[in-house]
Length: 87
Image 1 (cartoon, one colour):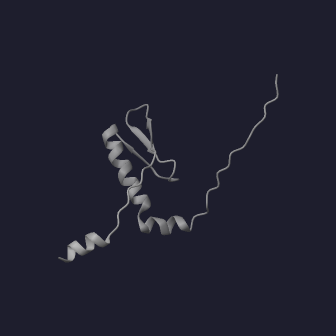
Image 2 (cartoon, one colour):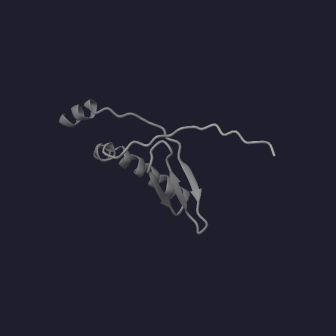
Image 3 (tube, one colour):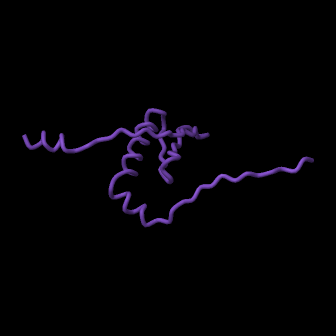
């Protein structure tokens, strides 16, 4: 009975992230998650890389990870317009 109450009281949300699979020259894949700076992993096959990136995202979003990242300086992203002179 207690486990039912715990399961009902715990809220879970589904979040979707774009992930980039970068094939490596020697085989395997490096995977990055642009929305989560520093979230990077690798796998020997696409299936392994998919499993690894799921784990990496879960670890990144874990409450203990948030405390560590909160003390790091914030990253700033800007878009710059560049005008090129005609040659």
